[in-house]
Amino acid sequence: MIRITGKKKLCDLQSKKNQSIHFMPSLIRKLFHKSEAPKDGLTQPQREAIVDLLNYCMYADNLIFLAEDRLITDTVAKFNWDPKLPFDQFDVRSIGNARNARENQGYRDQFLASIRDRLGTAAVKGQALDLCQELFV
Image (cartoon, rainbow, N blue to C red; front, top):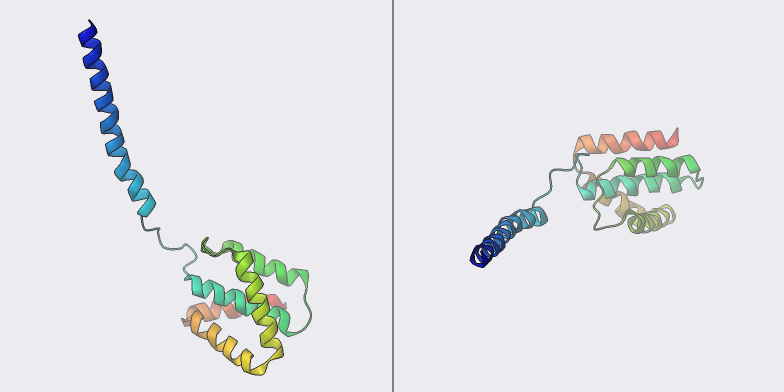
């Protein structure tokens, strides 16, 4: 009976080893699995460009309303923002850039050209324009 128990323990250990061997590849696949395409249909540079443009529009007229900030927050909430770049950190930099653009014509031209380039397609530019118009309403 001891032998059977010994064999049973050996079988149990082998079974657990086999389970862990089969588990590891699936775990590794999950870790390195390429994530599916973003549901918002935007690239991270496009998301950042939209936020830069909205911040510029918010600060351009020297009047800042809570509703404008809320529109930006609500817009970003719909984005698949890259978690490697926390939005709060990006937004602080974006607001600084928007303020600099408001005060310096040379920087403004460069800033807006950068936004234009990052937006890329006509569809995304249209989406950004719609959001800007919504910001001013």
